Length: 90
Image 1 (cartoon, rainbow, N blue to C red):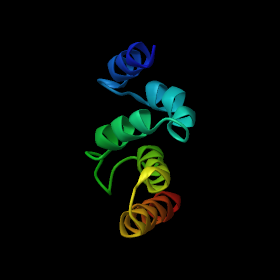
Image 2: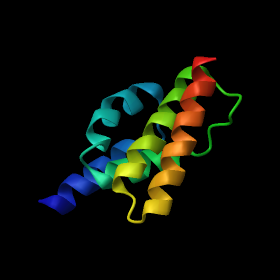
Image 3: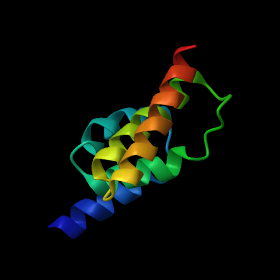
Image 4: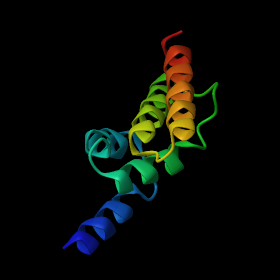
């Protein structure tokens, strides 16, 4: 059952657009696989890109802090996410 859900999530995250990001973002908090896929997909967003995409990139970075294993990784993800969110708000 988990494999089927993972495959469906993976297929839905390939070729992300804003609608798909909005649909999958709430699930990323509880599902590490979705969080990792969103993080990988949004990692290509430049820091001077659209503010909404930058905000999602920052948000998913902070969510990745929850799923990270070490305290150093948690801190790094969180700080990156906050910086991106602040830049998007500017």
